Image (cartoon, rainbow, N blue to C red; front, side, top):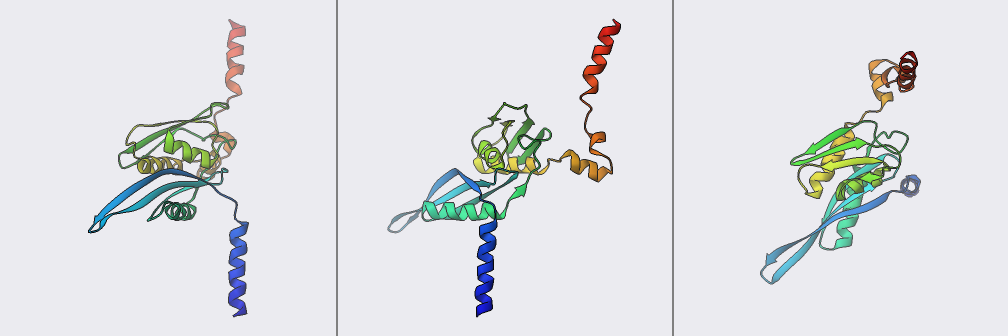
Length: 193
């Protein structure tokens, strides 16, 4: 009996040590079922959860009451989190697109100070992920469920230069374009002319 209590105590300690997640309610949908005595209402909630340091997940929950639906959605979102590599902790490494059903989204890296330029559900994903500069556009379905799934699909495709270099057996410097060389060459050409 003491062992069982000890195990439970350890589990609680582990849950407390996990980083605190922020959550954002994206959509809530009221549905009704007509029965003999009238109508019964239910609620479906769509929630995005993230630690604002590169982890994000989404979940949906259904219940007879709104708070219970949100709780279920939040729990599901925490179970389905993905990790995304961020450049300088503020933007994406490269441009990408995502797709789910009729939902299509395009995401582009942005210079510092741009902010999050994205619509509704996509904005919630980027804010929970911790991205500060991104330009995104939804080209397909406006359904929030499809938009979030398409955004997550695109984010799963992202690869950091470090992971690409490791896979190809090269150094990170060999993969990244050399930006310092370009201005130096243009100044030499100008001097010669």
